[in-house]
Image 1 (spheres, each protein chain N blue to C red):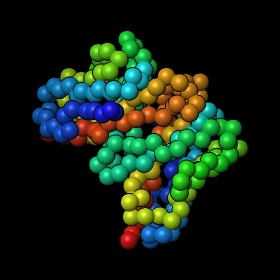
Image 2: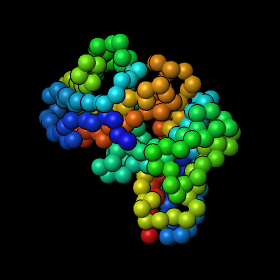
Image 3: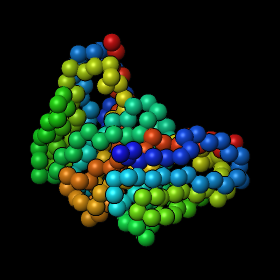
Image 4: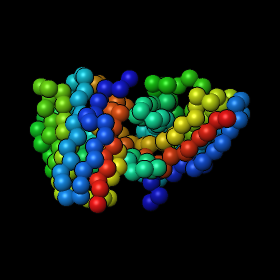
Length: 112
Length: 115
């Protein structure tokens, strides 16, 4: 069953703008991850945030986590055409870090 | 390092035919996974292997079997393919550690069409 739900399902912006995607989940977690999938390719890990962290940065990526609201957001600043991809959040299954529970993804289009 | 490799990249089957999807990783990871990805459905776990010698069912195991041949290889078999199994199949692997080592590494996928 899907735990994560991304919002919006699709997002279209102009190059240089910021893109924000949200993820909500249902149960307690140990950590939350964000992945990117370029069209026709496998998923690539972007960033992991632990349940005791509130914010994390990696280059142009900023992830926040609000465990009280069971939600996370991924912000991509100064977007580029190369950021066009689908973005997925994934949470570990409580008590079992071997499996991830995946959201349905946000499709981001960055227009030149 | 090649990371996670999958063969074949594309396959067309007729209903009732069988085939095996191959996956190998060279990162010495303990855990390996098979997912299917369908439009609007996200990633769904078919089977996983937490360590060499063990396999467990995921969310959608019906119609599939797996073999963890050794630490490197994890194959997925369709014994009698059905059109509902038309999908993109991804293999992934992960090291054993928790916390910051919980990321999964994905192969490029196999695009399977069952007619």
